[in-house]
Length: 244
Image (tube, rainbow, N blue to C red; front, side):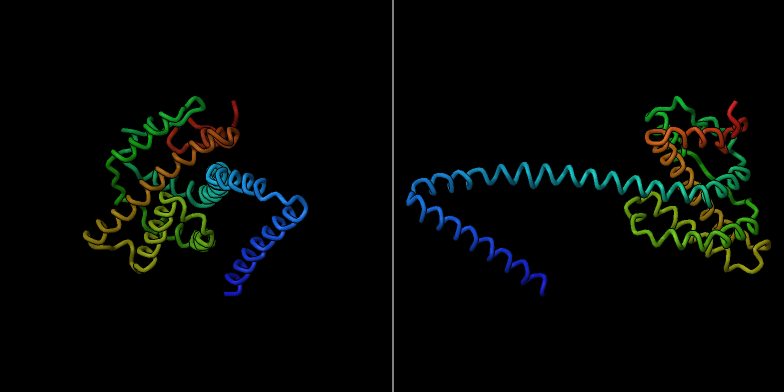
């Protein structure tokens, strides 16, 4: 309420100040005609001022702010992959029995362009992913150990601005809860295994998509980090971190 009345007071003060200045102008020059001409000119220019200053300039500032937020968000995503995502990705890759059929399409290279990343995303979307036969106890422990880090990441409200990554985080948390609440995870019913397989496949697919999107960001903004990603690509059996 105080903030509202503070703004109203400011508006009243500015109107009063304008009236005083016009009054001083008339007192000195006694020329209402001159005041009227410039007043109407200022009013006529007001729509253009709103267009150029309020709309265009404001849009430029918003675009720059959005770009800065996007960079910070990708830094957070990079930390996620360094601490958790790459471990999960490497784990799932070892369990993917169909990977040999399409892994060559995910071998990102230094010469990749936007169309190559889009094609890889399309390939992931069209691929049938089924990871029911993963080592559940190992996956369970990995997610339990990662939980404090993931919870800390969720404190960052910027994550909500990227739907794909927020969906991945929710899928990872859900899978972690599903696994942690099962005492005898090595002896599950066939129906329960199928249910967990759906959750695991969802995490794997979202992880693949986010990995491709993040790799494209690195290609555009941080070539030296992209080079490291290429040299540690889990889909390339010949990838070596050492520079040859």
